[in-house]
Length: 356
Image (cartoon, rainbow, N blue to C red; front, side, top):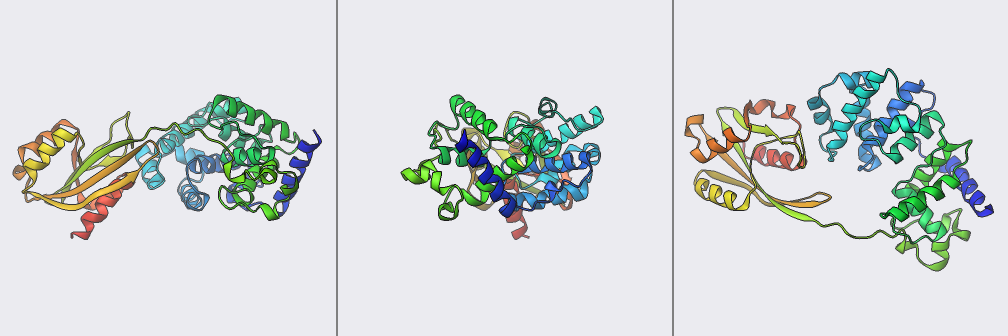
């Protein structure tokens, strides 16, 4: 028990001297606005480095200063503002949750209530609940796993049911009931600044004398994570069609990556794609080949092509069938920037612009 108290006290003291000054931590904001700011930051930072996420947070807050403003936006507007952050389901969930909050009449102020918001899990609910409302709920994220596993020498895999339960209970036991906000933020910052994944600052660490991993030479081995992820490779052939100042795009369907984002003509099926590309080879201008785009669960290898015709009746029958059967629509090339697209399609558009 004494070691737990020492850990908590040391981390809080470290935070007093080294904590990051982040705009969404401004506790002087009215509660509803503070909740909106913290919630927005947590959603943006779920899969994003803080340096990149900060800029997006500021842009969102400038465009939609309140949750009501965000709820009133269209999904396309939100996706467009999110473009470049990836994991676009976060943006759709953010928008949906904003409308949930408006329907409730206020931001929920209990852990269970916060978890009812679309896209909010245990960690995000604990972060919002403790930072904004002072609720005694410990956060457990990558930083917390790393700090706790190293300090206490825990080698239970963090991506197992057993590991998640063990670390959640330990984090909760360390949480001071009267300082949940400060402690949770201290753990986030301690892992991000002091006990980093690579080259942690062990020699300057206030916990060094009692850290199990440092004493046993296992800092680089902890935390333990089972490697069971199967990565799938997909081949994309994108054809940008240019016709009298227009191009054809479609919204990507549900149930796949980049749901709701826009893309030009895509040929993915290998056999059909090879046949179609072979039939169109005389009309296609290769832009880039073998672009490797890595996602969490898959790797996409993409080829980019340009197809230019003076009028739509000159389009090959193969292309006409693909466009008509998969929901493509014609838009002005000058307005393409108004549509939210995946980063891979951004690269295609960059290649197209280089051809002008």
